[in-house]
Length: 161
Length: 103
Image 1: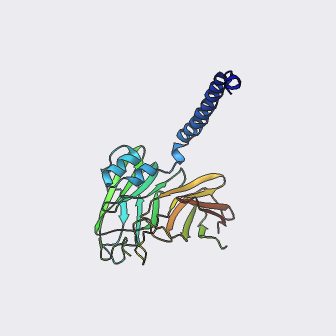
Image 2: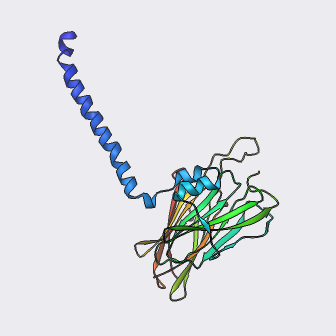
């Protein structure tokens, strides 16, 4: 056995080295492309944040200032927290994205919409709300962040069975 | 299987208004069923609208989007008869695609 295996260790080492190099190479490749396509990537980290401030930071990496050019439409009172119609329109220029945050949900970030050139800066959707809390819309325009906030009273939460 | 996506896209000449309704449970992973077992999270993560080879609207969703989600938006640069392609993917690797004609 020894006689037959003794010439092998070096060859095996070289082979192993080659394989691990190949694996490292393969591992790097998707990482590189993922970075290039960062614009198109699902912002998993931001959706995992609990608080609103952390979620905004994870998604945009900066803070927003309130703006009266954003119109956030949400009901005063939502009878069913499972389906709360919320919409936003803005007169801001060069809007690139609009995001919705529900402050006291288990995870604050609810939805984030990318607005390419030619798409109007207005979105309507329906969100779940755990309880009475603030809904914030963040509009990214010309590289800056603007926000509008409104409190919605929830009589039946959206997270109970 | 019938498509999970229902879309209405109407053009008024300059602007195309799109409304989409998708059938999906959008489970948060926080709710228990009648036996007290947690229903695992199952929700749409990304929803994309493409028209004439260009993304016109991309939605990234978390679990706080309501069950059977609805979304409405408008865009410029399309005309009646153009195709609008809609596709979604969820956190379990599920997906669906459909194409609608702009009316």
